[in-house]
Image 1 (cartoon, rainbow, N blue to C red):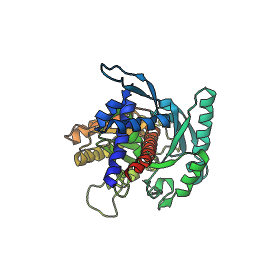
Image 2: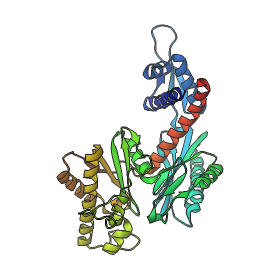
Image 3: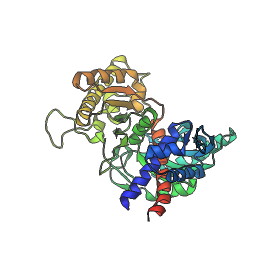
Image 4: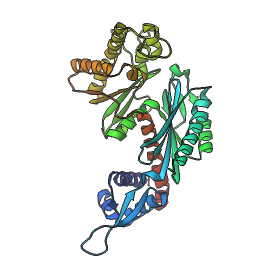
Length: 381
């Protein structure tokens, strides 16, 4: 029964991908593409229609018999909320069912964990919905909210850990906060690592099936997509380069990780800028030295990752990349080309807020999959 249940869920996900990638599609085309019966395809499309994500737009052309019914995706039928913790700010967005960002707002972090995990995301989301309503833009359904957090994020047990830069040195259970968020907004809530959300957003926007996103800011991390799937690992720590040892020789207990080398606090101590990190007041030689030092670390990490899992596309993002700009990306690219024979591509973000897009896509995947699987389970019991 488990295999059948898994197959049904995969069919539903594939059907949704087909629906969102075409201007119009028929149940016959869905059935052929998935290798299922016409009756199954009819049921799947009826589900999308009932859920408000599709509508029948009329009949297609056909030479014999009944003409096929055509369906179209309705991306404006639903809202998805997403919130990202970014150092000293919370960024919150409202997206449509195609994961297109409609509105976003940032707010400085205040208070403790409850404020930036529950109070601020909820209050900002409610404000944005009100703004959209005043613009005459409303959606019948709210699908869910994605909460992007720093550190190792275990979305099975609702725990976060190993985020010392955010004063989280041990495991912390956030289940009660998630429930409170769900109650306040009236939608399911899902948690994800912030950099994982960013790489998933880049994947959603570009379709690149194998890529990594390296974020440089208060924390340092990498998100990985392999074969079109977000890689978490059994302990949810895939891509935690903050703790990746970087040393010239084997010296247990004496190595420094990437975050200790190029995290904002380390850079601040080494190069002497204030908490409002910016290059406007820096000397040219300081900017050049910082760019050189960071690109050295990045080039070794990228070359190692490219050799290990054959990722050939790396996206650089985060506050430090925003500040240093193209010069950091270009210098990193140059050094990677010198170190690695695998022709890795190093580039900047393809969209301004990839983590919001990735968080929304995860919500959509999880919620559509869960609802459709629940409906399908009745058929397989």
